[in-house]
Amino acid sequence: MAKVTKKDLIDRIAENTQAKRVVVKRIVQSFLDEVVAELARDNRLEFRDFGVFETRTRAARVARNPKTNETVHVPAKRTVKFKMARRMKEQVALLSAVGVQSARSISGPMGHIVAEPTTIKEHSSRVGREMEQSCAEPDAIQEQSAPAQIFLPNVDAQRDSDVIDETREAVSGFMEAFGFELDPRITPVEEFGSWFLRVMYRLMDKLSPEEIEKLYDEMREHLRLKTVDIVQGEVWRQRAEGAAKLLKSIENVDETVIRLGDVILIKAVVNGKTRVVVENITASLARELENNPVLMRAPQAFLRLVDSKKVPAE
Image (cartoon, rainbow, N blue to C red; front, side, top):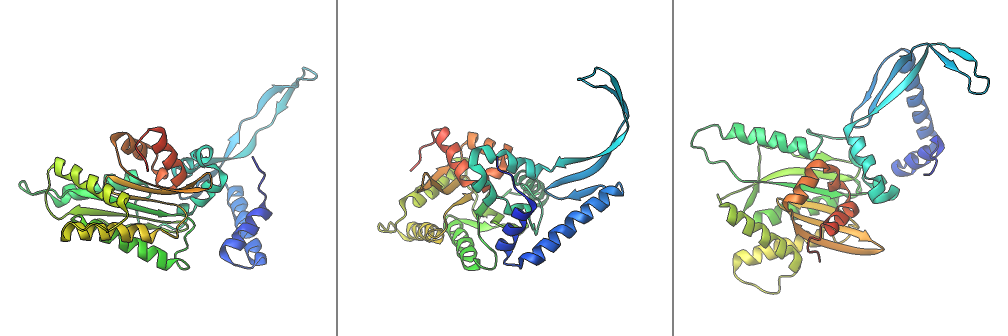
């Protein structure tokens, strides 16, 4: 465990934002002063996705001095209590699995969130409600949906806009090649810091569960193949090209996690070597994602989880 001082944070923020250190120092100190002032007024400070600071009064009590065995009156005093937000708990829980450097790379999504909801679990719940509302007619056919999530760590929205756009378009093209279209009823969730996107696709044609399972198997195999050397008709060619473009879009990205319905693509650096793994999301992996959605932002931890479950990997 390393000690991190205010100076360390100021230096890091100045480097990440390219702002003058003296300006960052003034802002950080002003922020801390305001926090102290509000707590002194007995106000409760709430920082979304971070936590809550509030004051508590500890009642007066009688204690015993262990050295002299004498009783001592301890007067009442005010203390400050901090309660972590759920998002912070999820990210801190990954420290033991991914280490400080990797954990730092996933800290971005705690920053600016331009749409709700804030977790995959909440997103899935809202998607379910909206799908139910859209299919209120008794004979209505409910479309088959596929959630898609993209995580690109250490990517800046302005500096790396070309990388973001290329990956977003490649994912969209790949999904369309397999018969999916973007669901306009579901609001995309985009987060910045490290770039993260959640959207929902839906099948344009109604398929049976067996046909959907076969479709996801084909998606996985096209991504594993990584080539368009063999052409077996126009549909196959479009799918192969879609897979090739998607894989090309992440060539210059060190690590990423991309979910395409029930297919997961993980690129991570393990022991100094880059691994790219494409797997179907089994029931077991689906439960892990439901219980720990922050795995979508931790390529190394997710890859270790896949390996631990002995899912066939590349």
